[in-house]
Image (tube, rainbow, N blue to C red):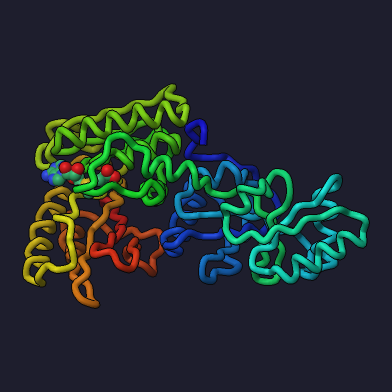
Amino acid sequence: MTKSQPAQLQPEKINKKNILFILGRETILSLAEIKSYFILNNIKFEIEHNHENKLILSVDHDINLSDLIKLLGGTVKICDGINDTKTQKDSLAKFLNTYIPTGKIEFSINGFNALGIETKKVLKELGRSARYVEAKNTATVIFNNLIKKGADIEICHNQIFVTKAIQSIDDFSRRDFGRPGRDDESGMLPPKLAMMMLNLAIQRNNNLILDPFCGSGTIITEGILMGYKNLIGSDVSEKAVSDTIQNIKWIENIFNVDTAGLKLDIFKSDIFDINKKISDNTIDAVVAEPYLGKPLRGSETKQMIESQATELKMLYLNAFSKFKKLLKPGAVAIFIIPRFRFKEDWIRIDCEKDILKLGFINDSVLPEQKHLLYWRPGQHVGREIWRFKKI
Ligand SMILES: C[S@@+](CC[C@H](N)C(=O)[O-])C[C@H]1O[C@@H](n2cnc3c(N)ncnc32)[C@H](O)[C@@H]1O
């Protein structure tokens, strides 16, 4: 990504077509993110297929997939459906012959090596020079420049798809590991998760977004890159505020951000005093990963974890009583509530009922999932991502 992107793409209406999304590790969260994007942009869609990390949506809008991939944290690849094509070597060769009309045909077929080799033979018979690349992962596809120069084929649900856009591995690792302001003790949100949370908020570019536990500023910096223009970040720690400011400058330089119209306000504040700094009924969305407690090592007692959970619950409920004032009616809070691994089970913080009592409803993008979990096996803390709406 070289420039900040608009959070909305304004695609045109077309006849229905299928798009394949290859999702990241947290597939349900990725699905919720995509759904949020379509809701924001008023695009109707139907789920044609949803299995493991592959999601096929039928949509009625012409979406620029290269722009879309830059706005999604949880999608690894986006592929266009090819109409009326059967998934056999002859039909694949016919498709490739027209898709790449001149020069050498370089292509890959993810997960179908034998078919790839057969297809190459048919292409040779058609008089075309062809090279089949065994693409083991997206890095191979990027390395061989298959999207621009050749064709990366996905076969899913008996349909052929051609990859149009791949998430930039380099950009993410630069943002994840290159940020100059760091706090490895409090922890930093992975940029992909920050993007997914921002998308779950379903906000237009100019809406006012607040992260009152901004830490090193990941939600703010990812928000800037996604094209949001009005962002407030605050934190009780002086170091967090200076890290955030440092990271914003870094991201603006490295990613050549268009700062026209960008309004940022970064300041020090305890969540308990935030109402002194921000007027009531002004915020469109809170997007936040709050303090998650002391980092766990796995050797803590149940009692210790439970007492930490009780303390955190008080902090979060206090935060929501402030959000209730700051948020506009109908505005949302995308908020992480941690859960703690203890032996083979979880110790959870039960905040939901009390948050509802404060004047919120649970407004999950996927109604069958009250919250979405972000957790990697082996981690002592899981992040529950909740969406509450002020009533
Ligand atoms: C888990 S970190 C947030 C990390 C952030 N999402 C990032 O990616 O860098 C939690 C932050 O909450 C801040 N914090 C803790 N208690 C607070 C309070 N009472 N008011 C405001 N901020 C608080 C901490 O200083 C810390 O920076």
